[in-house]
Length: 320
Length: 293
Ligand SMILES: [Zn+2]
Image (cartoon, rainbow over all chains, first blue to last red; front, side, top):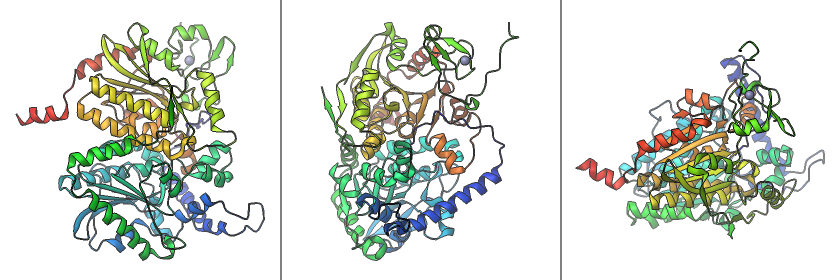
């Protein structure tokens, strides 16, 4: 989460939507370049300014964001034969960053929801790098309610830097859309299994991750803020991102240690990007087993279990 | 006597928004005038010239809000254990100790019970002076317990938010408090107990994206910064300065995100009136039976 900036004093600007759009695209292309070059940082830098060794937390960040890491749609293709995408929030639009639809999974009908961060340049721009807007969260909620109506379990796949921080998203109530998902997911009467497959970025990730079980892929990350954002606020220097990544305890084993996630899904040796099919098989096994464990629970029991799961999160205080 | 009056400047165009203090005097961010602190205090920390709402101490707010200024504080002794052993430029533990010293509180929220217009209420007030009002495990737990008490007693819940969002120094522990509180609010909603969320300057990040936007009524003080992403992050994303008044209460009202913008001096009366409408509420199960019948 970002802190409000008391020093920000935007000057009046001419409202030029076109210029804004160009700027946005330019920025996205820059982000994309950054995303593609980042894994190379694992190699020793030429200038010697940066440490030659990458700290273990940052290594995970690079794996979680690896350009070849399977996306939501890759997992859908590998695990579900007959995905039918459903579009739109019935309010404003259809968000290409947050997708959903039904599919069958080993004989079960399930609802799938996930952020699509994109693979090639064109897709990344089209799906806004997996950064959803309010209409994405509202579509997700609509589809989850649809699943509840027909008593179908929900599988969500988290892979986002965060909810989109833009003018239009704020105007349409980004915060309200996420907040509502948190509250409404808490009382769904069907099983919800959430899996952080790549980057679990803050409230934008949690907005589809209030599950009876929360799984995390071995090299995924889940954090309250990106290491870059944390470094620029707390260290006042975005280049201290590796230290921030360590400090935030954002890796799967650490989060399991704090009991914030329930299970780590193993990845093929070297990371999911080396063998998407194997990564999907391992995830499929975990999803199957977790779904089976909730099959006999009533809607009331599912709500109660999910409530208890979240109620006990973070008992890190003393009481005088 | 209006000939000397200067136009109130939009909040976002004031070049330096730091409040300049020189002992007994304070400069208003709204109109730039120098105000005597005592005069400001007597006016509920609202500029007598331009109505700019200064940030308010959480205890003071409770005293001004509740009948006879009386309240009973709950869960006062909860204190963070620094689960991440977080250190940036200085250890989180040091920041906590400094905040404790500055505010006399152990974390960034007061969970209180008192009466409002004769009716018992549960009120939580966030304290910006404690690490920017940020939400970690203690804030999450205190608010969740307050919600549970509101359900148990069927007392209305009012939360005054004043927060930069989730507390970075508690990492994903902070993030999960959003889910924890929202889940408790689902139960409050099922129970038919009213919840009024009052957003004050600033209310951003994980606080806005969880309980602050989940009131039966979502209201705000004038001129408060309210949003999901902070203005600086948005400016970095779009590479452009933000328009005047963006993410202020009035902007949110215009975009349909608030029920009302309520000046501080009318807040008490507004809340009493709103709770009169809400009555005692009806639980979801009773509502279903009533509808079926
Ligand atoms: Zn003023």
